[in-house]
Length: 186
Image (cartoon, rainbow, N blue to C red; front, side, top):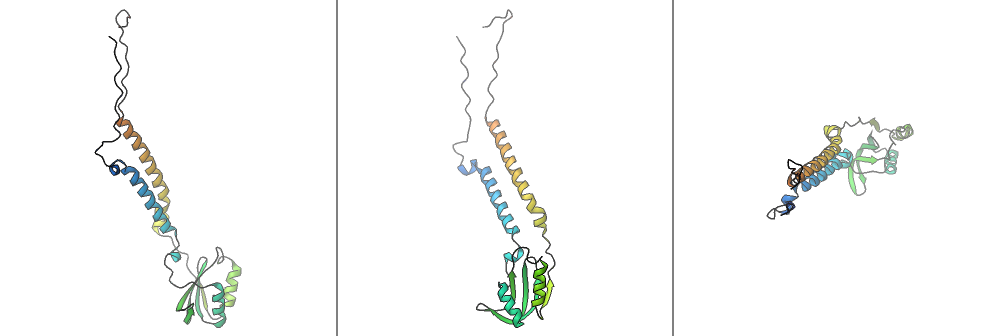
C-alpha cells in the first residue's frame, strides 16, 4: 500500500464572521494617516497672509493713485507684499477701509529699483520694512518629518502584513526517506 501525500493546507484568509472593516483596518488607517498628513502639510505650507487677509487687496496702480493724492499714512514692505494704513478712511471698491494689502510678484521687494520707486512716490507716507517672519515649530520640525513618517508607515504595513501572512500559512511538511539497515527502501 502506497502512502498518499497529505492534503494541501487550508489557508485562512479571513473568518466568515469577520466584517470587511475589521479585515482591512490597517489599510484604512494607513490611507487615513496619509490624508491627514497631506491636509496638515497643505494647511501649514500656506503663508500666513494667505490664511486670513486682514485688509482688502489693492492693486499697485490703485496704490500709486493713493500716493498721488497723499492719502497713504504708512507702508510696510513685506516679503513680496505691501501692507499699509490710509491717513483717513478710503473707498476700495464699495467698502470704506483704513488698511490695505498689495500682493506683488515674487522677488519684487528684493529688487532695489522697486524700493527706490516706492520711496520716491510715497510722498509723506512713512515707509518701513517688516521683520522677517519666523517659521513656527510645526513648520521647522514637524513638516520635514511627514515624509519620513509616511515611509515608515508604509514599511511597517508591508513587513507586518508579510509576517502575518507567513504566520497564517502553515509550513509544508518536510519529506523524509526512511532507509533500512541494508539500504533498502520500503
